[in-house]
Image (cartoon, rainbow, N blue to C red; front, side, top):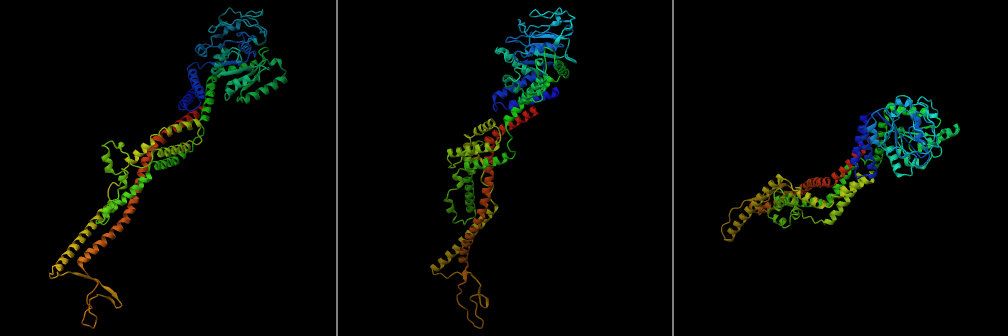
Length: 620
């Protein structure tokens, strides 16, 4: 992986951490932040150096392994607890000081050409510990006179001495420039400060070499406290079984197999496990070659940081839960809007629109002489305060938000219905999501419950539920009805005049009549016509109607008939108006649901998706 890839992975993890703030366990977030900070700090330091940490328990032989790898006595081994109190660094090459400052390692030994003439010390496992230099003191044999320190009366050999055991002049095979080898304090030290130093450097090292011994290689403190937390980082972990010279070949093989099993159970399947002996040099060439290869490739730092980021990012992905169903949102929104419609009294308003439309149709197309009866019943929309004219009178221009309806729904019932609808909506859209995210989404959704009743009422009041214009046919029918009323009035006036002439014994006025044909067995005949073969008529014809009477009766009958037919068409039109009003009310209620419920919950789900996506990228 290139540094650019690591930068992208770090940025993705940082995005996931920011999105998950307050949603997942604080300890996990703090760990992820520490990984991001560590990656950015390490990325700003030398990429030419590889930090290898020798970690282990008291008496495991870390210091002896360091000396054997370096080929010169650097660390002072001992047998009393604590053996190592401060970390020590063996450095190959220059330019590692800023990196060591970041690691807070003050004791530094620069391994260079001058070490070829340095005296060599045969290690003594029974040597008593000596006072070590204080932290921050640099120790460099390349600047000494060529004599290595001795202890316990051990003799030193002159600069050209051959040396024996692991201190024969061996250095890691290949190019060792850039290798920084750390001897850490004991992870099981009785001094808390020493353990904290070891834990901090275990987190910051590029490559970890755990030195174990045959007596404590299965120690639970090692596996549960250190190796298992490193699960998923097998490529940057090496386990060295030291003191292999005390075992027979069969015992060594069996112990290595058991150690590989334990390491695999710790989540480090694939980690390199080898047997070494700092006393005799057994296996040291393999360890030197491994370290030299890591230093030459200069990829251990990136691999370690990438492994840390993958592990913590995967834990964040797991905390996000499974993604909710993709189609759940649309169905859940429909159910939410339907429930809020009931809570807002939309069915009552729709029924009022239907009743008001029928009332308006009757007032426009009914028989004019009976229209006043319909006006005795109050307009349903006006009763709810939803007439446009009334709304304009109740609020100043531009402040329609002050208008409220007169719906009879009780506020506690509205709030209870709305709260239940919101809970169901959140449950539907967060199905499968981890509990912390569900709680956060529910909190965002319920934050608007207290304002839902007023918001719904205001949305209903602000929605225009009346038709924008009257149907044209209403006006035409209205003209016809009033024309029939005019005919009725003319007929009544004519009859009144005829009655006056009769009452005053005046000669009757000539009155035209309408003779209606009738059906007889011989066909259509006109009553009053003379029979065939006779010279007389049939007398007065009952089917002869005077025109004034016909005008009165006809206008009444036609007016009532037109009113009845128009009532049917008015009911159909009222139904269409009600459907249109329901669509507009649904849009208004849906806007409230989106603003107070769906959008806040959607923001939480978008935050979850952003966290999951970024964490998935970082964990890939």
